[in-house]
Image (cartoon, rainbow, N blue to C red; front, side, top):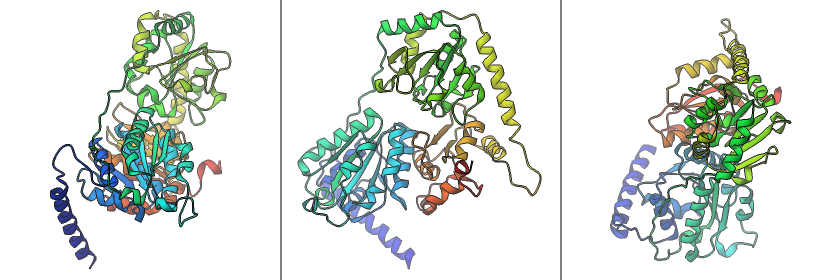
Length: 500
């Protein structure tokens, strides 16, 4: 019976799409939308959005019906809206492009919030459609009423309630540009009746500008060069802002004789093919990374907002480079702060530097790292038959067997610890997690988003038993959405970090 129903539904969907293609002339450019929901779907399609993640609900019917007529966007039904937000964030992170999630009114979009916090703190462009109760009922304590424009303020750059169809096209464009340009979450609160209203006569289109190259002023670059040229022991701390700057960072380290320490989100960008690597710092890092920072006379922070202040040196001069000026001095006082992209700033800085012939500070840090690495590798060994496998050894085996361009998603807690220490990046692999927000249950939904964006790449989710059980229902989504991910569950029968 259910199979016959699915076949009939598919036939009906094809017939509807054919009807709307004729009726709305959907093959013509530019597309002129008919309802607000149509305008939303067509604009997102023009911007290259390929999926919308969410859980269906009455207040979202306008959008889901419009998607039936928009062949280029697939509705990705999940079992929980939190999964939808995590998946959209992973899709944005692995593509660098706008991703979209949606929740129905009241509890539906409320469930998005935790995942959106993670997206926002990971600085990935995500648009959330928060469907709302009928516009005539707002403020009257209606069934499922909340105030999304207040609830989403803290986890977004932009949130706006649409109360009139005429405002929607401009609000949509502004929200999309906020998410993309500011690298974070934007939320549109859309009452269901407004979504079904007639759209203004505005073409659904999208223009994507090329991101600018931001380089600090020359006098700031010269001040940085002067301080580095006078320094005897320089250490580099590299974060997620170092993406695409591998060559420039290694050239800087070579010129200065500087060890390279990375924060967790910088691992995939700087760890590989790096003769200056001395490991990660922080609570789950290497002693070698900690001491390379502690004993330097100048620390250069490159695209990182590493949060743990007690790991920063107290007596060193600190130079920080970041695209976001509000990051400068946020974690520790800086002697020099420069606003710019890491790659273009280092390109401009390099000719002003004098090579450092004395490599003793670097050599000492590398020796310390080799010893720390050896001690950790000694823990990644097989156990006797009939005894539980060491998680370090399991992670090492996963690392050895995974594809050269695998995407790893890791749950918060001990899976992140093992991934940080035993997964090897090579310039092709990616590592995704809730590294800033620190939410449990992220690995499975992030794997869904990564696999949807990269169907031909291997996606491996390293799940904790506690994290997996939180959103266990979305195991069904893996099969329903036909997203063949690999899952490894670290079952220690406890919340490992809490237990410690």
